[in-house]
Image (cartoon, rainbow, N blue to C red; front, side):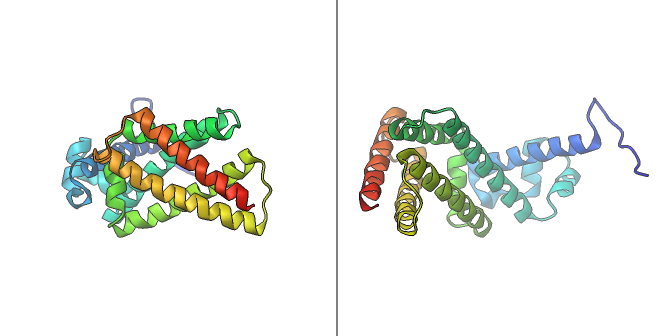
Length: 211
Protein backbone atom coordinates (compact mmCIF):
# COMPACT_ATOMS: atom_id res chain seq x y z
CA UNK A 1 0.00 0.00 0.00
CA UNK A 2 1.43 3.38 -1.06
CA UNK A 3 2.18 5.90 1.63
CA UNK A 4 0.21 9.13 1.05
CA UNK A 5 2.31 12.18 0.38
CA UNK A 6 1.88 15.02 2.83
CA UNK A 7 0.64 18.34 1.48
CA UNK A 8 2.13 21.69 2.50
CA UNK A 9 0.40 24.92 1.62
CA UNK A 10 -2.24 22.94 -0.21
CA UNK A 11 0.30 21.34 -2.56
CA UNK A 12 1.40 17.73 -2.66
CA UNK A 13 5.08 16.75 -2.77
CA UNK A 14 4.75 16.08 -6.51
CA UNK A 15 3.19 19.48 -7.11
CA UNK A 16 5.90 21.24 -5.14
CA UNK A 17 8.59 19.42 -7.11
CA UNK A 18 6.89 20.37 -10.38
CA UNK A 19 6.78 24.00 -9.23
CA UNK A 20 10.49 23.94 -8.34
CA UNK A 21 11.29 22.37 -11.70
CA UNK A 22 9.37 25.12 -13.51
CA UNK A 23 11.28 27.77 -11.52
CA UNK A 24 14.59 26.16 -12.44
CA UNK A 25 13.63 26.02 -16.12
CA UNK A 26 12.68 29.69 -16.09
CA UNK A 27 15.89 30.58 -14.27
CA UNK A 28 17.98 28.60 -16.75
CA UNK A 29 16.31 30.39 -19.65
CA UNK A 30 17.09 33.70 -17.96
CA UNK A 31 20.76 32.75 -17.57
CA UNK A 32 20.95 31.67 -21.22
CA UNK A 33 19.24 34.89 -22.27
CA UNK A 34 21.78 36.96 -20.34
CA UNK A 35 25.06 35.14 -20.98
CA UNK A 36 24.46 32.01 -23.06
CA UNK A 37 24.75 28.33 -22.21
CA UNK A 38 28.38 28.73 -21.09
CA UNK A 39 27.08 30.53 -17.99
CA UNK A 40 24.63 27.75 -17.13
CA UNK A 41 26.08 26.53 -13.82
CA UNK A 42 24.21 24.85 -10.98
CA UNK A 43 25.08 27.70 -8.61
CA UNK A 44 23.90 30.46 -10.93
CA UNK A 45 20.68 28.70 -11.95
CA UNK A 46 19.79 28.00 -8.31
CA UNK A 47 20.65 31.53 -7.26
CA UNK A 48 18.47 32.92 -10.05
CA UNK A 49 15.62 30.57 -9.12
CA UNK A 50 16.02 31.27 -5.40
CA UNK A 51 16.34 27.55 -4.63
CA UNK A 52 18.77 25.32 -2.76
CA UNK A 53 21.09 23.31 -5.01
CA UNK A 54 19.70 20.02 -3.71
CA UNK A 55 16.43 20.84 -5.47
CA UNK A 56 18.31 21.17 -8.75
CA UNK A 57 19.47 17.56 -8.68
CA UNK A 58 16.04 16.14 -7.88
CA UNK A 59 14.96 17.24 -11.38
CA UNK A 60 18.19 17.44 -13.37
CA UNK A 61 20.86 14.83 -12.51
CA UNK A 62 23.07 16.07 -15.37
CA UNK A 63 23.61 19.52 -16.88
CA UNK A 64 22.46 18.29 -20.28
CA UNK A 65 19.15 17.24 -18.72
CA UNK A 66 18.49 20.87 -17.84
CA UNK A 67 19.59 22.17 -21.24
CA UNK A 68 17.35 19.67 -23.01
CA UNK A 69 14.38 20.47 -20.76
CA UNK A 70 14.75 24.22 -21.37
CA UNK A 71 14.83 23.73 -25.12
CA UNK A 72 11.91 21.29 -25.13
CA UNK A 73 9.86 23.63 -22.96
CA UNK A 74 10.53 26.54 -25.34
CA UNK A 75 9.63 24.36 -28.31
CA UNK A 76 6.38 23.33 -26.66
CA UNK A 77 5.50 26.97 -26.07
CA UNK A 78 6.00 27.70 -29.76
CA UNK A 79 3.96 24.72 -30.95
CA UNK A 80 1.13 25.57 -28.54
CA UNK A 81 1.07 29.21 -29.68
CA UNK A 82 0.94 28.24 -33.34
CA UNK A 83 -1.66 25.48 -33.00
CA UNK A 84 -3.90 27.74 -30.90
CA UNK A 85 -3.66 30.43 -33.57
CA UNK A 86 -4.44 27.98 -36.36
CA UNK A 87 -7.50 26.72 -34.49
CA UNK A 88 -8.96 30.21 -34.12
CA UNK A 89 -8.09 31.70 -37.53
CA UNK A 90 -10.23 31.57 -40.70
CA UNK A 91 -9.05 28.97 -43.22
CA UNK A 92 -7.74 31.50 -45.75
CA UNK A 93 -4.08 31.42 -46.90
CA UNK A 94 -3.23 35.09 -46.29
CA UNK A 95 -5.26 35.42 -43.10
CA UNK A 96 -3.84 32.25 -41.62
CA UNK A 97 -0.25 33.01 -42.67
CA UNK A 98 -0.49 36.50 -41.15
CA UNK A 99 -1.90 35.19 -37.88
CA UNK A 100 0.49 32.26 -37.50
CA UNK A 101 3.64 34.17 -38.45
CA UNK A 102 2.52 37.01 -36.19
CA UNK A 103 2.01 34.60 -33.30
CA UNK A 104 5.53 33.22 -33.70
CA UNK A 105 7.09 36.68 -33.90
CA UNK A 106 5.08 37.88 -30.89
CA UNK A 107 6.26 34.93 -28.82
CA UNK A 108 9.91 35.77 -29.47
CA UNK A 109 9.49 39.52 -29.10
CA UNK A 110 7.54 38.99 -25.88
CA UNK A 111 10.35 36.89 -24.40
CA UNK A 112 13.76 37.97 -25.78
CA UNK A 113 15.40 35.06 -23.93
CA UNK A 114 14.02 32.76 -26.62
CA UNK A 115 15.98 34.61 -29.28
CA UNK A 116 19.26 33.97 -27.46
CA UNK A 117 18.27 30.33 -26.98
CA UNK A 118 17.68 30.04 -30.73
CA UNK A 119 21.08 31.54 -31.49
CA UNK A 120 22.78 29.22 -28.99
CA UNK A 121 21.07 26.17 -30.50
CA UNK A 122 23.20 26.37 -33.63
CA UNK A 123 26.41 25.49 -31.77
CA UNK A 124 25.29 23.40 -28.80
CA UNK A 125 24.93 19.63 -29.38
CA UNK A 126 21.94 19.13 -27.08
CA UNK A 127 20.15 22.27 -28.21
CA UNK A 128 20.88 21.39 -31.82
CA UNK A 129 19.33 17.96 -31.35
CA UNK A 130 16.16 19.43 -29.86
CA UNK A 131 16.07 22.07 -32.59
CA UNK A 132 16.17 19.33 -35.23
CA UNK A 133 13.17 17.62 -33.65
CA UNK A 134 11.28 20.91 -33.41
CA UNK A 135 12.11 21.74 -37.01
CA UNK A 136 10.69 18.39 -38.13
CA UNK A 137 7.46 19.07 -36.22
CA UNK A 138 7.17 22.58 -37.66
CA UNK A 139 7.80 21.36 -41.20
CA UNK A 140 5.01 18.81 -40.81
CA UNK A 141 2.70 21.55 -39.54
CA UNK A 142 3.54 23.91 -42.42
CA UNK A 143 3.06 21.21 -45.06
CA UNK A 144 -0.22 19.94 -43.61
CA UNK A 145 -1.71 23.39 -43.07
CA UNK A 146 -0.52 24.62 -46.45
CA UNK A 147 -2.08 21.74 -48.35
CA UNK A 148 -5.28 21.90 -46.30
CA UNK A 149 -5.67 25.65 -46.72
CA UNK A 150 -4.96 25.49 -50.45
CA UNK A 151 -7.17 22.39 -50.79
CA UNK A 152 -4.47 20.29 -52.42
CA UNK A 153 -4.51 16.51 -52.03
CA UNK A 154 -1.44 14.57 -50.94
CA UNK A 155 0.55 12.80 -53.65
CA UNK A 156 4.23 11.80 -53.56
CA UNK A 157 5.17 14.70 -55.85
CA UNK A 158 3.01 17.22 -54.00
CA UNK A 159 4.50 16.16 -50.67
CA UNK A 160 8.02 16.44 -52.08
CA UNK A 161 7.39 19.93 -53.44
CA UNK A 162 5.58 21.04 -50.29
CA UNK A 163 8.37 19.78 -48.04
CA UNK A 164 10.97 21.61 -50.12
CA UNK A 165 8.95 24.84 -49.96
CA UNK A 166 8.34 24.45 -46.22
CA UNK A 167 12.04 23.82 -45.57
CA UNK A 168 12.98 26.94 -47.51
CA UNK A 169 10.37 29.00 -45.69
CA UNK A 170 11.22 27.76 -42.21
CA UNK A 171 14.96 28.14 -42.70
CA UNK A 172 14.47 31.68 -43.94
CA UNK A 173 12.10 32.51 -41.09
CA UNK A 174 14.59 31.28 -38.50
CA UNK A 175 17.37 33.42 -39.96
CA UNK A 176 15.12 36.48 -40.27
CA UNK A 177 13.80 36.06 -36.73
CA UNK A 178 17.31 35.61 -35.37
CA UNK A 179 18.47 38.81 -37.05
CA UNK A 180 15.35 40.70 -35.96
CA UNK A 181 15.58 39.70 -32.31
CA UNK A 182 19.29 40.58 -32.35
CA UNK A 183 18.42 44.05 -33.64
CA UNK A 184 20.32 43.75 -36.92
CA UNK A 185 17.17 43.72 -39.04
CA UNK A 186 15.57 47.16 -38.77
CA UNK A 187 11.87 46.45 -39.28
CA UNK A 188 8.93 47.04 -37.01
CA UNK A 189 6.72 44.13 -36.02
CA UNK A 190 3.97 44.69 -38.60
CA UNK A 191 6.41 45.24 -41.45
CA UNK A 192 8.27 42.08 -40.52
CA UNK A 193 5.05 40.06 -40.51
CA UNK A 194 3.93 41.56 -43.82
CA UNK A 195 7.20 40.78 -45.59
CA UNK A 196 7.32 37.24 -44.23
CA UNK A 197 3.73 36.63 -45.34
CA UNK A 198 4.48 37.87 -48.86
CA UNK A 199 7.42 35.50 -49.18
CA UNK A 200 5.37 32.68 -47.67
CA UNK A 201 2.55 33.18 -50.20
CA UNK A 202 4.96 33.58 -53.10
CA UNK A 203 6.72 30.30 -52.37
CA UNK A 204 3.38 28.63 -51.68
CA UNK A 205 2.10 29.82 -55.05
CA UNK A 206 5.11 28.34 -56.80
CA UNK A 207 4.53 25.03 -55.05
CA UNK A 208 0.88 25.06 -56.18
CA UNK A 209 1.91 25.71 -59.79
CA UNK A 210 4.18 22.66 -59.70
CA UNK A 211 1.37 20.49 -58.39
